[in-house]
Image (cartoon, rainbow, N blue to C red; front, side, top):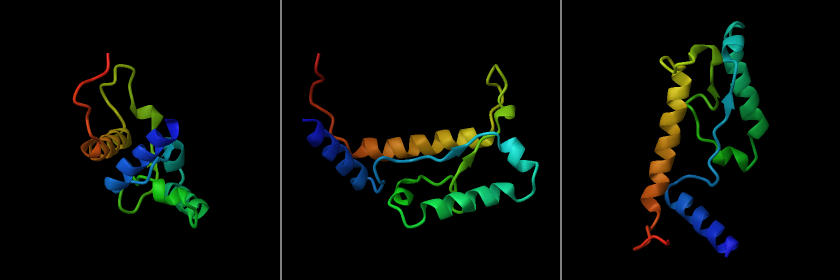
Length: 114
């Protein structure tokens, strides 16, 4: 049963045009990387080279057209969550986008089990 369920999930992701499982690469402490000019770009290039030629690259959900990783600045979120790093917002949007695409492909049961 587990194998059939796994195969079904992979099929749903494939129909949505997303490799399963979807991977989001998130780097923290972006404030430290920004202190050094060009370091975010170097980190991104490093990750691209590490994944180049592997099947893992197909699973990565890119932060933008030219940036693979989401770089989160932990210092930008206050304890009351009134301000959030724009990269966190972008990560939430991308996660929701993937979830919507996958959810559109799933067949919902006529009745839910009790």
